[in-house]
Length: 471
Image 1 (cartoon, rainbow, N blue to C red):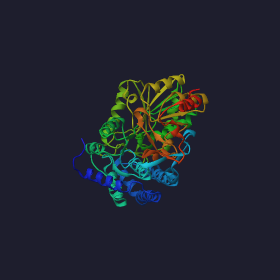
Image 2 (tube, rainbow, N blue to C red):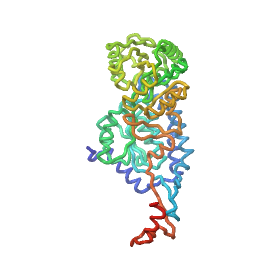
Image 3 (cartoon, helix red, strand yellow):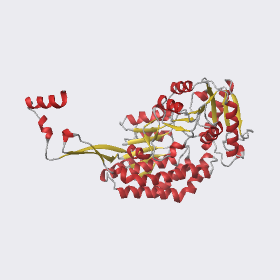
């Protein structure tokens, strides 16, 4: 149910009014907004990283600087460099029948957009969509996650100091506030989070016919080809799975290995993990699970796998955790996996890695296609035939060969899901288009050959149709 009269609604109305008075910001205005957003990031990067560390009860400042601050900085700079080109109308052919005429596509700002961001990468997944929305000429309202309250409060203050409330505003609150937020008649809603919540957002948006972009997740497979370098694959999978403690929407969710390669993979993965985190579970570079609820969920998934016959290899110190401690969790490699286990039914979103085996690559393709379409798919190996089979016969938001998670950092590529993993995409030019209406514009000249098709119809139109269209 939409809010009747709240500060949130008042902010929305202010932004709506401001947009109606100035609905097409110039290139220089948009670049200035991006410059201010970039200054916010640069000037407050340490405070932002500290806030995220506190929300996680342990996330390396260096990891935040590398995975979030640097990525957002490069993304905003990329948008600024390309914005003039993106704003330029796209000329299209009018066709001989309609000459003399010019046709083009004009990118028009949508209006007031709502951004709902999650807790796992609170900086990147808040500021990146804001940057694209501002570049496209919109007003933005942000609803950050209540599960990262310190960071959310900081964003509210920093964005409030940087932009007028009728351009960028932050709404704080719990799930009930988020529900009210998504019921506002935005011109677009951009959501990042779980598929379950994404469905609720889409239902709420439907009441206003508000279009949505949903960036969700899924069980992203990591397939190791028979010809792959196991050591290299294990190292790169370990990195993609370990950053942010596996709390990444494109983290490898499970591994598919050729039969007989299990021991080699486990050995190399363990070596890679211990090299990355020499202090074990106490390593300052190892991120904590965000809260006790998520930690308990992962423990239950792990216990379920054990109860159903899985063999578990724990990496890192595995002593009893004190309740007052953070929620750091060792990585667990899980073998003897079957599809009745919860770890093979639900997205894991943590440092548990199931390992399955196959005899023929077709088995893997059939298994991947039997489930929901994932956000990412990873294949290790240089066989052209296998790559082609994977690319042509599976569906996922994106594909990476011989690495993991790097697709998010390639600024020129669109990023998004398909099916249950998402609707729509952003990054690259697609990020600009995500927050734009592509408006068709046709301009006719004085000469009007189409008048030959005006009524009354007679032999002349019959001859034209017979000569040019029917034969």
